[in-house]
Length: 282
Image (tube, rainbow, N blue to C red; front, side):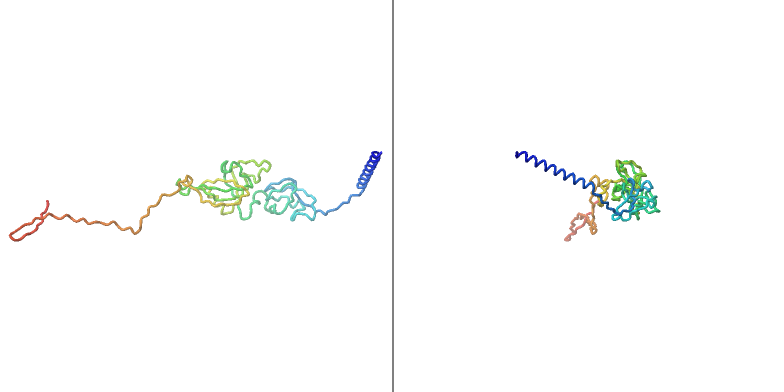
């Protein structure tokens, strides 16, 4: 009998809980949803990933609704303002266009707008070795090592780092790298971003000698100073022979006077007188 009462109480509790849960569910379903309207504004974003130097077209742009209180400063709302302008920095899909990533309207597209004020784009000829097996890609940074023989004497050949932390603008005719595969690119010409003084040094080194590009870590901002190396120093025999010094106040050698040996003499006695006479030798 006691077990029957426990069973009845448990069944009533389950029925009451289920009824309450079902009623709550029905109530929540009938409550009208409250719509909160957030003010928005139009913002032009990239329709796809765009690379450095690209000229913007209408198909590269699309407009989305952006919360008005969080609109990026300097963003554009009219796509026509961007058509024909060039990019000086890459843009990813759905990223808003900002003035800092766009070239001026009259600058056009391609490589020229990418060149910073006060700098020049200088191209140098490379091969598989000079171009670090094709891993010198746009956006990487390199050091330039020059090997020059100023006197045409084999002992005066010198190798020295003449430029450090130089930005690579283009490899061949491409100013963007293959972001999907990031594979090496075999090219014959590499374009570097240098100032006028560096342009003079690089041109002289490539004309009068040979240059080599040394790929560096983009996070490494150091610029160590090197004194260069010559063949003698390379083999560890760069110590020069000791120089013999002569004192300035060294006295002249003394000349000794040799006196002739005395001639033999003969004593002659005449009466009570004696005389010494030299005898000449024939």
